Every structure is written in structure tokens, then in C-alpha cells.
Image 1: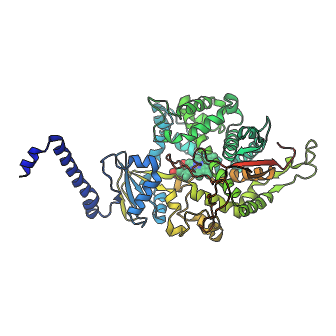
Image 2: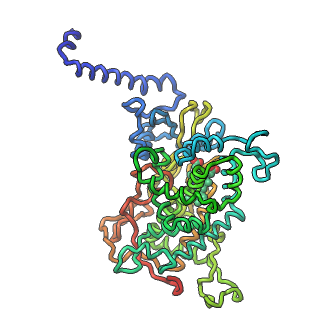
Image 3: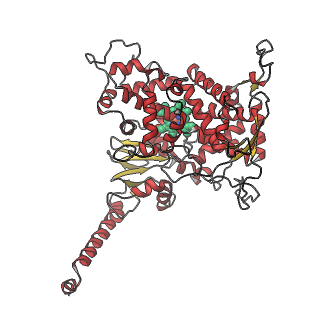
Length: 549
Ligand code: HEM
């Protein structure tokens, strides 16, 4: 009977029916039977197309995919897995599992990912081999009792160690922080010596600025000068624009879409940055060059490595600063509290030190950024709450040895991800108001800033080396801006009657204010997300200190 029926059905239809049947069988086996037979494997979020799995959803809206995974697990925060480009990625969101994963540097490695990043940033294959080679007696790169590299580290780990030395709190980090503040202070003015004219929104209304451009331009410029002096600007005056364009599309490089047959939007700025970074003079950390010379790294690959570090230094700060200022401008009580804290960090110079030309005006005031950073509980709570809600990235590791976390077995060859947004919105930790912007949670419960479910700077061996510097730079930028200017939401900016401000208790706070910008989560996030294109905060600013601007 079935045979007769099949004879009557055209072949393509039969083929489709057989394939659909096989697919159903496969799906039943994969997502119903297998989990029952192997309960110690993390459950996979079901999908329909083998190999492809969740690839499209991951690149298009990873946040939504991960939320779907959490719902599939009944929001128990038990480990689950998604499949991207044929590979399984374990997703960890339970605080205890996160801590265990960051601790396990043997089974879970960052090196594989770093290797892929180096390749995608254009480090050449030979340089790549050389950079991972640990000097052995008799090698071309072995110097007995090498004073520069006494632990005989391979170049990659040597660079990492130099960065840590440079960025962790101490003399070097203070110098970088001061250099940043001095540059930001110089460029935060109107006229030919400053950068603010470039942020003008309206030719007729002078001093109506895009807050996003202001944060982005001044911060990327100041970080560039603090790391490289004026060298990069001298080589290429458009260096800051190139870096901003690069950061916008950096996800393409990170995921390996940056090179190849087609000219992607990231290719042009990347080429310009590489050209500028090839100049040897550009290197601020002079310790690195001799070791790169010794190991035999070509100029192109050297520039690629420098670009990676330069990018780490600029990629997050302007977005954090933008969101903090946006929150302040939309909430007067927060604004006033922060203003009070930043004002308290300005120091008058002793009378003998005031320069005769300035007549002791506040141009000569000094910002005590260490004091600001340690004594601004409100600003700190806003900083933390912003990092909590605006960080769409995650820590990725490769499983190099089969290991067990949270009672689940991780097979070697797969990857794992600790997604910060899902950690930062775990209802079990942050309570029912998890999606509200509420800095007071960090004031009421100070331990939250150290909670394993709060990881804006990652964790374990590769925890962000620049976190102290980042905080000082963001706080310092805000202190200079508020000291020098009166900053207000632009008068007469388009109003949104239904716009709700971020409110403390989650109740809608309807008012005649410009709409609060929405966060851009349409491309894979590598850190702090910015606003959606075209959404901004437009501000009118007037100078408080007559000498500047
Ligand atoms: C708010 C600003 C910042 C955020 C949110 C941030 C976030 C992160 C995160 C999450 C990691 C860990 C990656 C992982 O383990 O998978 C990391 C690593 C790193 N960050 Fe940051 N970062 C910021 C600012 C900075 C700055 C200003 C610098 C340098 C000037 C910097 C330099 C680094 C370096 C060198 C590493 C790698 C550390 C290592 O491999 O040992 N970061 N950052």
C-alpha cells in the first residue's frame, strides 16, 4: 500500500518527505534521547540544520539567542550549549560556575582565541610561529640571563607581562593617566587648539554639540597621545578618525570577516592604522622593540600586534563615558550629586606655583584623579551600573582538556562563553528590577561590585589590565567637562512626549524630554555597546571658565 502510494507521488516530493523524516529522527535523537542518555553533557539548545545550528542567530542577535537558551533551561542558569559554525559553545551564567571557569586556566585556554585574533589582525604565519616560540638554550632568540626577558617568555606572554607592568596601578599607570588627562584637558575647548568645533551639530547654534562625538573624539585622541605621544598624529593627522572607524567595524576583524576578496568597511581604516604603526618611533613601550627584533618579527606583524593593544585601550571608554553623561543629563539629582563629587577633587595650586600668565585662574588647577577615583561613591555606583547594563560582550575560552564545571563535562575542542549581559541581568543576583538603571543598588550593597556575577572586566588570568586606568580616565574626563562647562540637554531639541527616563522604580516617567538613546545591539558586541546610529544626546554647552573656549 505504502509502496503504491509512493509510486504515485513525484520523486522530488518523496525525497523531501524522506529528508524531513530523517531530520525529525535526527532532532529527536539529538535533543530528546541524547540528553536523557548523557545527563552530564550540557544540554544543547535545539536547532534544525546540522552544522549551521545557531550561527546566524549568534552573529545577528547573540543576546536574543542567549536569552532563548536561558528560557529553554527555565532560567535555572544551568550550563547549556549552542552550535556556531559546527562548533559547540558552552554558555556559563551561574556565578559559581563562572568563578570555576575563570580559575581553570589548564583546561580552558585563552591562547587559542588570542592566536586567532593575531591572525585576523594580519600577523603573518612566520611571525605567528616565532611569537609563540619559547626561547630555549641554543635558539636564535635565546640570550642567557636576558635582562629584558629574564623568564625567557615567548613573545606573546612577554608582551602580556609588559602590558600588565605598565597598566596595573603604580608609577607607569599614573603617568599614562596624567598624559591622558592633560591631552583631554587641552582638546576640550573650542577654537583651533581644541576639538569641540568638530562636534558641532548646528552651524547656526554655536555650542550645540553631539555628546557622542564629544566623548569619542576627545577620548580616542587623548588615549592615542597618552600611548604614542604625538608620533601617530605626525605620521597621519587622521589617525583618530581611522581608529574610530576601525572600532565601529572591529567585530568583522575579530570574527575573521576583515580580510579576503571584498573590501569591508573595516579594511580601509585598518590599512591606514597599520601604515602609521609601522613607524618604529611610534612605540611607547620601548621594552618591546628589542625583544620583537630578537625574535625576528617583521614590521607588518609588529604593527598588527600594536594595533591589537591600541584597540584594547580605546574600544570601551568613550561608550561608557557617553552613557554615564546621558544618565546624568536625564536625572538632575544624579547630575548634582556627581558634580559635587567631581568639584571636591580640584586642587588650587600653591600661590608661588601659579603661572604669571594665567594669573592663577582655574586653568592651573589640578585635578586629583586618584582622590576622585577613590572618593566618589555616587559616580562609582553610576559607573558600575553603566558597566552592568551596557556590556554586551563575553569572555571566550577554548576547552583544551576535558574538564568538569558545575557538574557538566566539557569536551576538549569545544569553546565556552561567559556572556556578561546574562551575568549582569541574572534575576537571582540582581532582583526583579534587573533591567532598570538603578545605581543605588551598588550604594546599598557595596559587595555587589565584587560579586562573581558582575564581570565587566572579565576575570582570571586575563582580567582587564587597564581597569584602574579606564576608571581614572572616565572619571577624569567627566570632571574636566563639568568643571569647565555648563552642560544641558539642548533647548528645543525634538521632544518625545512618550519618552520615559530611566527611572529608579521602573515606573514610567513620562515627560517632555528628548528620547533617551537606545543601545545598539544589532552587531556582535565586543565590549561596551554604543547608541543606535543616529541616536545621540544633543547638548548645549556654555563655558564656565572664561579662559578656555
Ligand atoms: C571600561 C573600559 C574597559 C572594559 C569594559 C574592558 C574590558 C576588558 C575585558 C572584559 C577583558 C578580558 C578579556 C577576557 O579575558 O576574555 C579585558 C582585557 C584586557 N584589557 Fe580591558 N577593558 C577596558 C579598558 C581597558 C583599557 C583602557 C586598557 C588599556 C589601556 C585595557 C587593556 C586590556 C588588556 C591589555 C587586556 C588583556 C589582559 C591579558 O590578556 O592579560 N582595557 N578588558
